[in-house]
Length: 290
Length: 204
Image 1 (cartoon, each protein chain N blue to C red):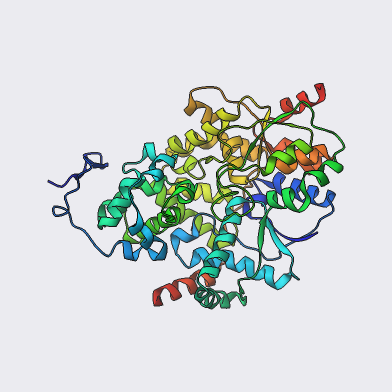
Image 2 (image 1 turned 180 degrees about the horizontal axis):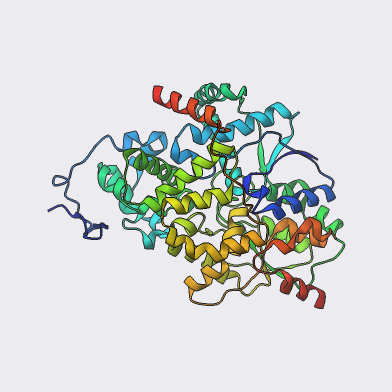
């Protein structure tokens, strides 16, 4: 299977381990992945607030690049906010084709044209549905027996523009984690909000949200995340969230492809566990004991 | 006396469920101006599913349900000056649960935009976030997390940055953020695109 890869800004720095492990896992599964050249920021949660049109044009710029580069390959995003912006733009254009003219008037300065055709998929969708638990299980070299993993989808991975899972009770990760040999810890905060940028602008509110997720997962050995924003809030801000919750919360947060890569026997250079703020070691130690 | 009042701390409060329609200035075109999605707000039946679903609602000065009612009734000033929209984390839970199919979260985005355009100054910690992010995005075409954070804290409250200093050092040590010198001169990567969008919106 062939994909165009849109890394997104976080994957170039704070979540480099997400990009690295995702690409390594896709390669190990036999996918052909090519990074989209000259990509720029999708606009995050900011562009649409600055201007209605900018909120469509920044994603459309990358979608236009994908159309130019692609021979029907789908574009793959790993960040749920990027994914949401791309699908939101595609939906807006599908519902109101008149928007295309306006978007393209803006894209003229970049010598690009968006045709409203390119499709964007989330990494989780591709792993769960293009490959699936069986194909993943077939390549497992070290089963994660004894490791209890709490799946965490966050918001924009599954709603509102995401067609591949239930927007409120998602389950895409269950089959994958079971295929790795891990025990899945289901909990009521699987699709709850991580607090997003509120951890900066309104820490009392944002950290409480991150804390609610951490507390719901606290009986598991680790959390599996599929978005760099969620990961940042749950991992980097874990101490601060603990203080807001008034209880010590300590749980490693891994990106799903890091867990898959571990089971597939990929080397540490592709998994980069050393970059996490909350050490991953204790969870991995449980693994070797079992 | 209007029921909608502002306390000495500047907090907006809705004293009761009864709203005086005559004592407060209203703009009946408010809903119409909230882009096509916002116009659907006339369908709202005030069931309160949005408030019950919102992880931020307990911290809001107006609950989402109250805010949408005020939008319907044209209480533009009260809505745009409230803090409620700035506590929205874009989780889209209200959006997918609304039994009337109103794209509520998208409408919040429009409200934030209107509040910034109107020059509402009460919530600088929130509005500075959009300005700092937008600046870095325009300049480099991609996010530079460290420069964005520094710009944000310089624009808001350096003291609060102190609380993040330890975390900042940890992130540096882990290689999660990279110190890069800001590029102050020269054309920004997305200057021309931003300018063209502004031109086109000016025409709109």
